[in-house]
Every structure is written in structure tokens, then in C-alpha cells.
Amino acid sequence: MEQSKLELLRDAARKIRIGIIEGTHAAKSGHPGGSLSITDILTYLYFAEMKVDPANPRDPNRDRFVLSKGHCAPALYATLANRGFFPVEELTTLRKIGSRLQGHPDMTLTPGVDMSAGSLGLGISSAAGMALAAKIDGKDYRVYTVVGDGESEEGQVWEACMFAAHYQLDNLCVIIDWNGLQIDGPVAEVMDPTPHDKKLEAFGFHVISIDGHDFDAIEKAFAEAKTVKGKPTAIIAKTVKGKGVSFMENQVSWHGSAPNDEQYAAALAELNA
Image (tube, rainbow, N blue to C red; front, side, top):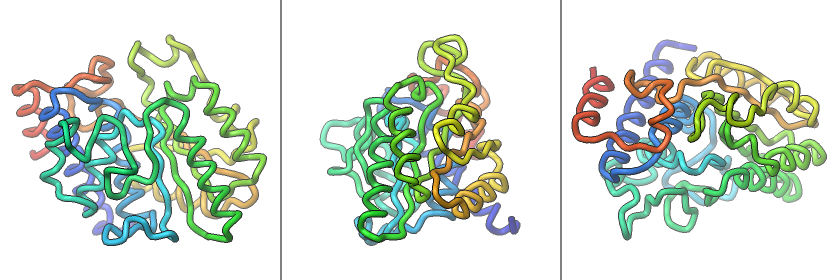
């Protein structure tokens, strides 16, 4: 990847992480850990990969994104704001009464949100339906969805995978955010859903495994996904929960806890350094 593109992506990711911290701090609630783990994936999708237009967020020919792990809305909101869908200053209204930025994405409220999400497992089903709709309508847009590793314990996730393979949805790309932690602790101890790669292959997917914080690896994975015909693609992205804020990294306590004033200042100092 050329240096200028890499620098743009790194700067965008830094700003998005700042937005996540500012939003959850202002709300005094939210899910910073899993939001920070998917920041680099969302940065690449919205700043390099997807065909989207902030001036026309409902363009029928746009690529679609569904945040299946909907509680990590702070990451999606910060990405959309920095991409120009709405003012960055609005991020501090997260979870406030009357705000367009509620605790889970709402497609009727927030510019750029393609599907409401919240109940785990539903998002990937919605994404598969969108991909099938594109096939039926003869459209060439692609559909992307991020699924949590803990979320993949849901049976509906695998029903959606079976559906996607049955209908040969090669316009669907599922990203598994494998950060290893969920609200109750390590995923492997709560209800181990691995091996994801072998299971997804058995369900009819083309599978790619990457470091979810390496922009070169992310770029190559999405490029490879677009060459796959006759089956959907799954990208298993190994990530770090809380990535970018050292005291939040790999700490399950930050799954659903907002930073206090002191932690907020420390996080911003680190991200701005």
C-alpha cells in the first residue's frame, strides 16, 4: 500500500478512536472495547473500499454495511461522522434523549446507517437478505457485515451462513471480529465457537484469516473477496479489544464501561500523542 494512503487510513482510524472515547465518555455508558477493536476494519471499508456518498446516503447503488454487533455503534457513528455523513460534534450526543445516535444503530434516525441492529445474530441475516435482493434486482453493489466472536455463538448466525451459501451470495462479505472477549469473559471459556475457519468452510464460505489491525492485510483480503465467485466470503479478523488505548486493551471490563473523566483525559492524550 502506498504511504500516502496508509497515512490517510491511520489518521482516520485515530480520529475515529477519539470519537469513540468522546461519545462513550459523554454518554457515561456504551461499549468502547469492541468498538475500538473494529475501528481499523471500518476505517478501511468507509475510506477505501465501499462505494458510498455522504451527500446521497440512500443511493440505491451504494454498497451496504450492517453492524451485526450493534452495541458497538460508537465505532460506526464515529466512522460515519468522520466520513462526512453528519457533524463530528454530534458524537457527544451519544445515547442522549432526542439524539440521532442511540445505543444501537437506527436506520430511521442516522444518516449512513443501512440497517437497524441490536439483538445479536440478526444483522448477518439482514445483510444476507440485502445481498440476495441485489442479485434479484440485478444490482452490483456489495454487502459487508461485522459479526462479533461472542455473537457467533448465536444459532441464527449459522442459519444466515447456510442461507448465504445456498443462494451463492458472492456479493456478501462477513467479517468476524475475533477479539477473544465478550461481556462475561474470554469467548473460549463462555461458549467456544471455534474453529471459525473450518466451520465457515463447511457452511460453504471462502475464508480468509488476517490481522484485523494491518491495513495491508485488510486491503488484500477485501481485494481477494471480490474475486470469489459462487460463494460468500468470510474474513476472520484477529483483533485486540480496546485497541489503541493501552489501559483498555485486552481488558474484558471495557466491554460495556465508559471512561470517567480521568480515564477520558488519559485516553485522549494517548490517541493524540
